[in-house]
Amino acid sequence: MSRFILCAFADEAGADIQEQIRALNDNQIGYLEVRGVDGRNITALTVTQAKELNGLLKSRGIAVWSIGSPIGKIGIRDDFAKHLDTFKHTLELAEALAASCIRLFSFFIPEGEKDAGIYRDEVMERLSRLCEAAKGSGVTLCHENEKGIYGDIASRCLDIHRQIPELKAVFDPANFVQCHQDTLEAWEMLSPYVHYMHIKDARRDGTVVPAGKGDGNVGSLLGKFAAHGGRMLTLEPHLSVFSGLETLEHGEKSIVDSDVYPSQRAAFDAAVAALKLMIEEMPA
Image 1 (cartoon, rainbow, N blue to C red):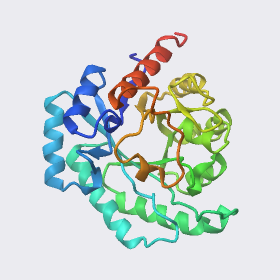
Image 2 (image 1 turned 180 degrees about the horizontal axis):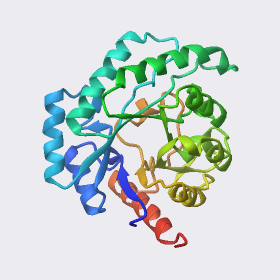
Image 3 (image 1 turned 90 degrees about the vertical axis):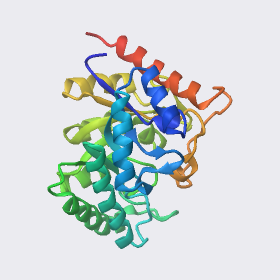
């Protein structure tokens, strides 16, 4: 396991922070990509609460790798000023949590719009303002390819990173599969910009499955990521319905078979086991 460092969205194991800590400790995962805390989005915490959370996590041997923020998960036509304020608060939270990264998105394109390119200038303007606000913070901003946003397919992600090279990439195989984007083609285009990976797999019909069970070419991508010098993997299982999933999906729902696992924790543990097995079976 030493070739990679494992992190996770532990809110998928349970909403309560103590449940999340137990899930990480039991699975020997030392890093958290923090998103939901006691049923609230991380951006709802005060700086004081974030410092208290950091102390609690440290006492249990856990560090925050990234803030899994909702920044950029608004419509491209929605008001940006308030959203920018939320981002500035998120930067303060990152400092309080000693987080290295903030995960963000490139804004939802209106439903039914066939030409996302007409919003390109506004997308770039908004992302540039986020990067400007983060200057000097020491935090790396990382764009995730998400269904329905401007950067949902590889060509538009590449457009973003070429235009704003200080904005790095979080590579999510399942999201590309759900957008009918070949993941190996996406990797060849985006690998120079990839800072870390989200481990989530999906079949072509959109169903989210454990790593290696879908069409995301996760095994091949892990090898390419390692060869590229990459080490940090954040597990984002999406194998069960958990608190906040509906909000995260923004109407672009993944297919989750809730009957496969008896609980959120069981689904989380299964996702961890699948990833660890895949890593163990990788060629030396």
